[in-house]
Length: 268
Image (cartoon, rainbow, N blue to C red):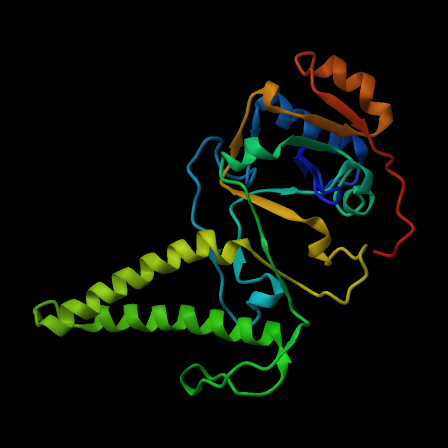
């Protein structure tokens, strides 16, 4: 049999630059900087080429997992959307994109995120130790509870281990300290490779809503992406920037795709 590909996924993954810049010229300059430098950086405030850092964990009265306020992802994001269906997505971000072959990014650690529908109605089994009651609830309520409990258990375990006098050397004390160390290390891995790849969203929102993250079909890479110009599959710009881009990046021999920067008809 021949090779087939579903039309609702793409063979390339695209990063759109300049989301928080309003002017097209500013967005173009950001894209130009990315292409010329050969680096997509997780955060412009980090020094180029520095090693990936753990996903930052934030807790407080408003640090709800379901609201994406618990874990910050220190990496670079892409969308898996065919060219013909990019319109809704680009109007949430920008019309300036850089795309790479999916296989190229997978070899550099890219993985799709895990989407969680906050408004999914469930009835979990009761667990008194974790405070889970057997009653219908939103999936987001359970995730907020479980993530909070997990971090809380780790913190209490570490506090208990630190409170043991240094002269104590019984087997149980050693086991406690070892368990605290392992729990802290487990939290680091889970934060970087599990929690930071979870994306809660409200399934009932309109497809074009800025917070309907499922429509982004997001992939993530932990840390920065360093690339050669030959690795770039496609650059996406408004048509009026096409000729200028070829002149500004003469070494780019990949494909060029034009997107209309008009506002979509769907509500934000």
